[in-house]
Image (cartoon, rainbow, N blue to C red; front, side, top):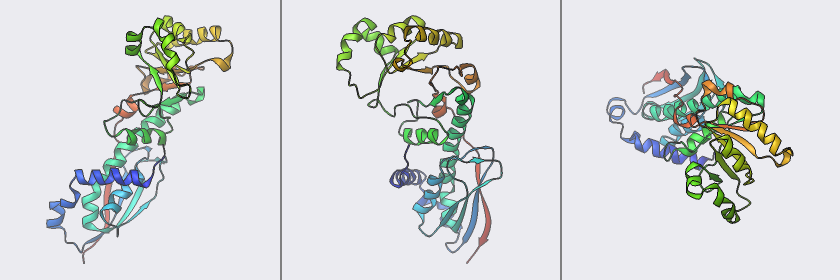
Amino acid sequence: MILNKSSVRRFVRAALNEDAAHQDVTTRDFIPASVRVEARVVAGQRGVVCGVPFAQEAFRVFDRTVRVTALKKEGSAVRRGDVVLKIKGRGRTVLSCERVALNFLSYLSGIATQTHEAVKRVRSKGIQVLDTRKTTPLLRFLEKYAVSVGGGRNHRFDLGEQYLLKENHIHILRLSRINGLLKKRRPVIPFEVEAESLKEFEAVLALDPDIVMLDNFSPGQVRRALARLARLCPDRRRRPLIELSGGMRIANLSRYAIRGVDFISLGSLTHSSPALDFSLELTRCNPR
């Protein structure tokens, strides 16, 4: 995903407003305006950094005079003790913006780290890791951005990007009626259909989809589906792409890293990734 300054600034301003950073009574009442500090943001554990532009902007939006230097780029690896940012400026600015900056870094780096781990487990088989729409309301852009930084690929961002006939669509339409309705399909929009069994998989192939999603298949069922696909569609150029979904976790990805699978989608990347630990340490204080 492409990150632009206006998007970063919009999220950062909303976060600073939510935290009432400009009404930080503790800092304003107890810390003199003349105090200048130097600080650094340090990684507390191994992972993949994501959210550096947001953390930088958290200080800069609040105070144009602050100097924030990034020592790590987006997507770079960090170990415990690595310095990610250095900050120099008013003590009030650093204290009032600290939590917002760290929240962006911790949250997004957690997603990028989990995505990177998932990618490592399947890339030898040529499989791409996808996210899903199981995202935090209004934070989808951030979460999908973090997936892309971690080396994953974004599935459809919203309902307007791609056709995806899933279980409940098929219950309503019935496969026998879908063929007639396909006349309404716009060919420029990718067409994906979900299959929940090997029998459904064969029926779905008759719809000529671009992608078939195998939902909650066991590794053995995946292999049988791929064998049937090779038999029913001997021309590789005409075969649909295969996506695995449902029950996918980083812990079991190695079992599903089967050659012939194109994508594995994991909702857990955006709804269950643990935050990565970062802290802000003051390294110098110069009262004036």
